[in-house]
Length: 116
Length: 217
Image 1 (cartoon, rainbow over the protein chains, first blue to last red):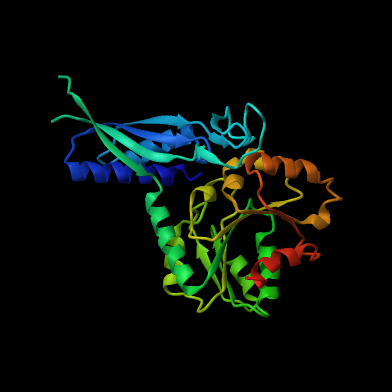
Image 2: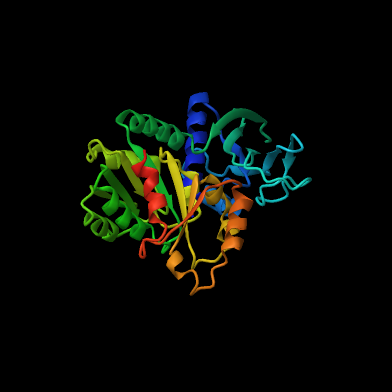
């Protein structure tokens, strides 16, 4: 269960941006979360509330955009989106591929702040 | 009174600080000529037993050292010190994984001079250590024959992030009805082409292929 320390890092990143930009209350935080990032979203949502308490991010909503695993298929020579996290093979032709194009993201993309 | 919302772009990796620190550790290890191995597995897979034997064998002709992560005890460091290699414990105080910062601070007052190989034994956990780069050159995931062949399918991120898989306790394979083909297929499903070695730290079976990775460096 490392979601709490992940949540603390998210709060730190957002709080630093708030300070730098002199922004007001944070209403929402946007996160891109890859299926292979090893982070459970329910646990993260809960941890985020805890981590945000008492910080400039308190009360903000964490909006998680889930990113599916995309692999490059060397046979079809095209990127293919998987339904789950395994098997890492082309869903169309079945060729195994370790070439993960996306799905490991764990990135704060944006925040929404209240004006004035 | 409704307030307008304004969107501010951030685009920052959540573990960016850890990753940057891990990168700086990696350059530092490269400069000192130290090859770093991060051992990850669930508790009870035999990381410490493997490391005990590995350190004892390698200290004969290589300068090796180990950093050992543990939630609360120093038992593993005591066990490993008997090999004669420098060993340092990192007590994580309940944290379920090692982070680059913990490695950095352990190295501040303990720099095993001229180590050719530094083994880092992560906290026993198949989930969280996957997310934290420690500046290692080689991430090794261990899985014992007693754990069940479907572990790779249950914990894809850690198997996906590894550079090598070790199947441990193979001396027990027959007794527990270990299905080698099923495990290999499951590893292949989450990390196609991942090299796999099978060994037993107790019987010594398969140890040479593992030790040669470091002897031949």
